[in-house]
Amino acid sequence: MSGDDPYGGQTAANTSPGWLNTTKDEVIDLELDGMAEFAKDMVKVQDYLNARTGQLQLLAEMPTDAWEGNVLGEAGYIRSMMMNNYKGFTQYFSYLSIALSNVGMAAQTISDIYGSSDGWSAASLDAVSWAFGDKSAPRPGNLPSFVGETFWEKYNKALAAGAPPENAPDWVNQPPRTNADGSVTAIALGPDGQRKEITTFSVPGGGPTIVTTTLYDAKGKVVTQHSERTVTVQRGNSVVTRTEYTGPDGKPAGAQEKFTTYGAAGQETAHGRVTYGADGKPTSTTTDTTGADGSHHITTTNHDGKVVQDLHVGATTEGAEAVPDSPLQDTLDDIQQQDYGI
Image: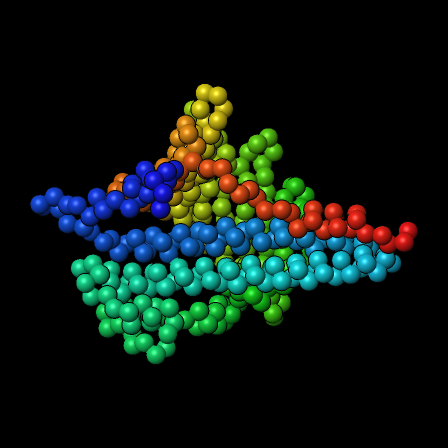
């Protein structure tokens, strides 16, 4: 490689083995509770995704409203293609939600397996394979007896309780409902008449936004309910968006803050995220600081304040365009060059 590598400093910082160095009385601690925190993060991401899936309904409404009734064949074809793409996209969201749940469950299972052992000294590939649903892998002997249900076992239990899990692909989206208080409820129906409602209410005047997800059984009885409350505030030279989560029991289930910090000239100098547990204590903090030259320094700390990630990213250099040509613009340019005999 040539000697004019513009990212030499960042490469050296990112690949430095300094984090392996310990003092005489210090040992590297592989904290397995990190897997439990990772599992919780997967649930938060899943909840965030599920709470906003109903907003995709616009993708179904707009083509229908734009080309309603007797329209040109080409317009009808476009409408049909857009509706098919919408259905495929919503199906993708459903399975993405399931994937997040499965990864989170596997992480929690691994944490449960080794949570009482001395780090990863007893870890085995079979245990990890078992956590990810490999039926050929033996069940770990030190796994608590209450752990072991597969997704489908949990799915069938949820059905027996009255409704599919909220991330199941069984739900069929219905037209949303606008309520008297100005909130909007996204509605989906289950296979046996169950109902899922995701209601989004924004308090007028810049107040918080509250998203409540409720599952009903076929008789209209509430099976489960949880909510999240999001508000954006100014803290000094930072804009902070805080989301607080409430579990099915009505008790706090954690929170997340996203922040963006600005310099004197209005330029962004840093952004990041802080997550909190149900007890209100920070579980992790990620900060992305922008240097004067456009470089980035990204650090992540755990609940003890220890740095678990330290990444340096150099400033963007001249080269190929970062954004590819728009397929839509290419199509429009091609259409304008055609002679349709009009």
